[in-house]
Length: 253
Image (cartoon, rainbow, N blue to C red; front, side, top):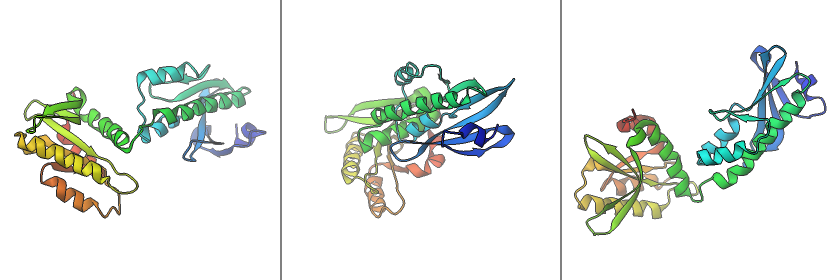
């Protein structure tokens, strides 16, 4: 099997990989211009595996899509003979003669996901960033991670936080996020986070219970000012440094 044999009359870009496998890039793209592609790999006894190695779903996830079980179930219902593995990979086994049809089928399945991606994406920057933060916290906090947690502030009003981590030793750790808008922080989110944390601090919450996670972008001249403002009422954690602070929430069993 080589690129010329497989791609005759198909017009795709192809590159050989190890162990006789091929990497194909189609002319079809996601909305951001990234090309949809598949891998063709020998699977023994003259059979070939055509798969995207979860590229389509990883593309959606990287943009902050919520890949719920219900959404994935609806996708599976539309894939025909193509399988969607538990790990998110599109897969179809084919004979060599059937490879062009198998490649087309898997690419069609990837296109189905690319179209669904539009509806899966968060509708605001805040929702998008909350989705990303929630996934990271869930991996380390597990069932100790709570979402949309309300608490009464000193003002007497209910304050809602997107996340809280229930730490048996320190109690609830309330987490507010601040998303980045068009290449810089949204100051509306900064002031909202500062107000919530001030209310929570006045109500008696300890220092390690008040946490703000900031989406920092290189070159954002407002970042330092925002950190200074927020640090008066909360512990400020930068999202780009999450490898350093995520272990503090390591309660998953």
